Length: 223
Image (cartoon, rainbow, N blue to C red; front, side, top):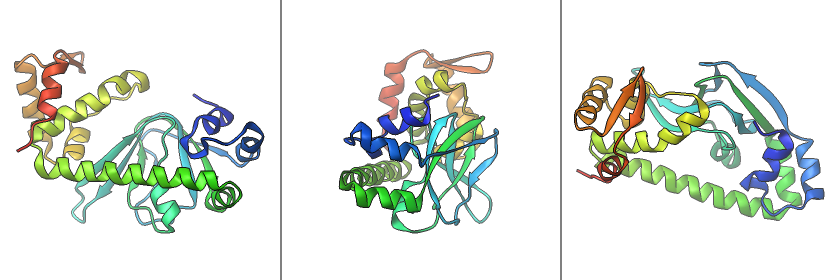
């Protein structure tokens, strides 16, 4: 896990700042730990601080009125959790839940605003970061709208395969269903079909990708 100083120095939010400019920023960072399944924040709450994930894995999700969960992203170390609501002054658009024990570093909204006023370069970095988030959301909408379930599932497996080994977290079929926007039973059938075709395998419940090329081709399949 990176220290506060290491994370601030490597963060794209503060890219371009000199060492003497980073030191006061590091002093503003606070640390908090969460246990597995603990909620970091809820949809509809005011975003009071910018949250950086220092260790562990967190899922960002929305819940429908009937309780159905849609996972929008899986957040990994060195990524942020809530920059959009923080910078537009709105409420959290998603809820965040720890998928394992996590450590979070935070900088308050007031301090971030002060940093941007003092260092215009940081404000420029924020613009680029928000533009990237917009593109990611557009890609998610496209995939949910036009890709078949197998294609969406293949993309999920590819995206999380390497990180899974790094973080120690494994997505359940329920998680995959919530990410793909479908039912767990559909994911189960799709995984069995991939296994029958030799694309994936299982070792003591751990999913193994046996044919990455086939999975990549499948992830590009649109309806």
